Structure formats: structure tokens, C-alpha cells
Length: 549
Ligand code: NAD
Image 1 (cartoon, helix red, strand yellow):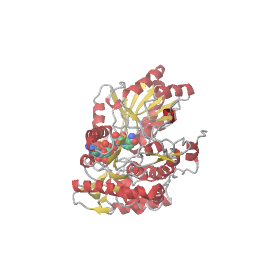
Image 2 (image 1 turned 90 degrees about the vertical axis):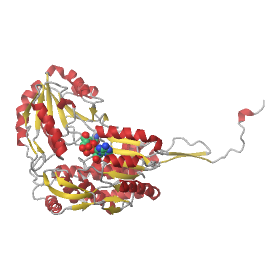
Image 3 (image 1 turned 180 degrees about the vertical axis):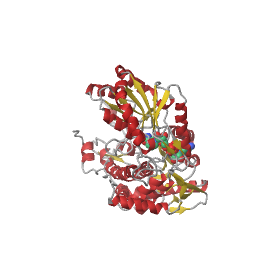
Image 4 (image 1 turned 45 degrees about the vertical axis):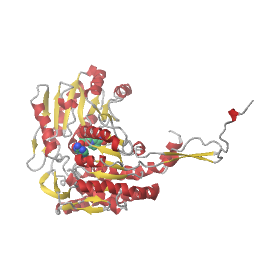
């Protein structure tokens, strides 16, 4: 066990992970979730922008539909125009001084209250809106929208509380008092969030706010409803007006307006690699207009792998592939989407794997017997089915199970497994972000060269796992794949990172690896001030060496 002051501080009195509710038949939580689902199904909500704490209904609306029942409208969302965008950034700038003055403890109290509300009365509201808006099963909504967001809020407060003591200067010589002020960035942070995790959406604007920044939150057009519910929760918890401003609307336009404001101090982004690379470029072009060099934090795409050794737990591997590839329809940045399986293992697991895929139930998220639901929208459906049709027509690939799809009622795509003899085929190297797993079968003797192929095949480096029984084989993979994944799993699926257990993030084309859910991310939102106070003030400008012999 480490024994440093920082580690001792982090270990003392830290929060526990929020327990996951089971939603078993007959349970109280299942009844209450079902009635909340019915309630949300029976209304069409008007979702406003929230600027300086005020609701703004612009009249320029977009609808939110249910991905597994796309004829059903859940909400009309009032989109921000340029005027509202400029007002949101101004509100963020104006509210920063008061927010800083309130102090870290008061800010922690707000976010700890958010966690209490989400753990209590708001849990079903947030979970139900996530199930309907983003088409998640009850379990997927629970681990994301409830547990992970509660954990983000609680652990972020725990980490931030110690920063003052953690980063004081080591030395104050006689006559001098040195100290470090943990200041926030000067200005606002633009939080641009993805559709697939309500928890990430809530965390991106609130993590910088905890440290004293203010934020403008641009939610994804596919999760406006659930994200609005989270915004309402934060306001009920006492978030002061203007500290976080909720701004549905065009990402490109919001970015343009943000960058025209000199107080743009940072970007907190999660989404695709292409979007992030474009944003980075725009920010660098805007530098002459900005007061500070902005902090850029982005977690982006993945092409997450499973490598099996000939000596491995075959049943464990099968379960990891099923859960890792198909939970939430493969729409996790960490989803297993390429697997390297030795010929002997493939011979023993392939029929069972296909049989199990055949048993996967898919449909409405409100039917709790379903393991999968629909993908997020028509664009995703077209993109994913494009990969499937090209694989079907390729001479190097074969679809061994699934491959069907139907968008008549919802955007449904069957869990699909492709086997390829080309380790660089399209579905082995590109992010698909859907329920498609590609397997490359290698000769049992080629474990080490397969690790090299895995390392080199894709530009991404987010998550990956190794299945092996022998410690020496695990070590070989650990070393060969050092830079291939920011989150590395041994004998487990590559998904399901838990706050304070496996801080999450990847490098290479997968992001800046600032580890959401850990102290490293929070440190990006501070800009310390070093302070020297001289107690014995020099009264003579001459130095002793200047004396005459
Ligand atoms: P996306 O890039 O399409 O959208 C992300 C956000 O960026 C959305 O709010 C979107 O409106 C906004 N956006 C899109 N174009 C923009 C532009 N030109 N200017 C400004 N904003 C713009 O991604 P998505 O479909 O919402 O999410 C899926 C992607 O996110 C996948 O690539 C997935 O791997 C990645 N992801 C990564 C992590 C991680 O931690 N690494 C976690 C979740 C999702």
C-alpha cells in the first residue's frame, strides 16, 4: 500500500460507489420506474434553453423521438439562435466572480446535493428519460444515468477538496511565506457532450464548475430530453443562475460564437474523433482573439479489442464478447468491436457464441426481458448497416450470425458477428459504433505477432482486454499493448469502467486521456497562482558581495 500524504488524504473518508439497483420482477424500484416511464410516455415536454437560470423558449424547435419507436415524439426542444448563444456565454462570464467567491466548500455542497437528489427522488425520472430518449434498457440506464453520474459528483468533490493542501510549495525559507492559490481558469468552459452517456453529459459541464469555472453546456441532439432533466435537477440542488447554461442548438454555430468571445477558457468534449479534431483546429485558429490559452480536454472514439491466448477461459471469453460487443447495441466508446482469437479456441467457442447471439432479445426498452434495443437514429442506422452490407459483399469477410436490420418502427440492427481473414479489413480497423463484432482467427503459434497486429491495426487506443491463464502470457500482452489502450482489462470485457476504480480515457486518436472520474481531469480546470509573502522586507538595495575588501 502506498504511504504518501496525497494517497493517505485520498483514501481517508472517500465516498463509496453508488449501489446498482437490480430491477428484479416485483421489486419496488421496478414498479416505480415503470410508472415513471408511463408518465413520460404520456406527455410531450417543451424543452427550453436555460440561460442565466432562466428558461428561454425560442420557438425554433426540433423533436425528440424514441429510437425504438421513432413515431413517438417525447419532446419539442427550443433551439438556441445566435442571440441566445451570445447571451449564454455572457451569463457564464458574469456569474464567475460570485461563483468563485462562494468558495470550494459551497460548490461541493451544490454538487453533493445533486448526487443526493439523483440517488433519491430524481433517480427514476432521470433513468426513465434516458431509457426513452437514448433507448437504454433499465440496467444500462441505471449504471449510466444514475450510478455513474452520482459517482462523478461525489468523487469529484472528494478529489477537489484536497487540492489546496496537495499542491502547496515544499519550501518557505525563514522570513518568507510561500503558498499556492488553486484558482479556476479565467473564463468559461464550453462542454460539448455525446448522446450515449447521460452521466458524461452531466459531468462535462459540472466538473469544471466545481473548480470555479462557469460552463455552457451544448448537449447532443439525440439526448436533449434526458440532459434537460439533469439540468433541472442541478437547478433544484441550488446551482446558482449562469454557472451552467444549457444550450441545445447547432454545435458548429455554438462553437463559432464561443470562440468569438475572448473569455473562452476551455473545451470539455466527448464525442467522435473527427468532431474533436475539427474543434481543436478551430480553437487554434482563434488564439489571437482569446484572453488565455484554452485547455482542451477530449475523449473520443475507440476500436476496442479482445485478444485471446490459446490457453484461456473459453466460457469467460464468450460471455465477455457477448456483453462487451452488444450491450447498449455496441454504442459505447469502449465496446468490444474486434477480437483476435486463436484457431483452437475459435473451434471450441464459435458455435456456442452464435447460439448465444441467437438468444439475444431485442425490442422496446420498457420490456425488461430485452437485452438490446434500437440504435440512436437514422444516421447511425445507415452508417452501421453500410458496414454490414459491405462486409456481406467482401471476399475476405463472412457474416456468421445476425446481419439483419429493420428501421420501420425503430432503428433495430441485429447483433452481428463477422469473421475475416484480413486483420486490416474495414470492420477490423474503423469505429462502427453499433452491434457489430469482427473476429480475426489466428494460428495458435502466432500469439506474439498477433499482439503486434492488434497494436498497429487501428489509430485508436481506448480500451482492450487480454484473455489468458498464464501470467507470462498476460505480461507479454501487457507490454506489447502498452500504448494500445488507456483502459486495459485482464480476463474481462473491455467495457464497464467504474468511477474511482478504473478512471476512464484513451490516447492516440481516442483522446487527451485526462481520465474522467479522477483527479487528473479536475486539474485541467485550475490555473494556480503562486504567492510569495516576504516577512522581512529588504531595506538596502545593495547586496553583501558588493562590500569593499
Ligand atoms: P459526435 O461527435 O457526433 O457528437 C458529439 C457532440 O459534438 C454532440 O453534442 C454534437 O452535437 C457535437 N458536434 C458535432 N459536430 C460538431 C461541430 N462541427 N462543432 C461542434 N460540435 C459538434 O459523437 P456522438 O455520436 O454524440 O457520440 C459518439 C462518439 O463519441 C463515438 O465516437 C464514441 O466513441 C465517442 N465517445 C467517446 C467516449 C470516451 O470517453 N472516449 C465516451 C462516449 C462517447
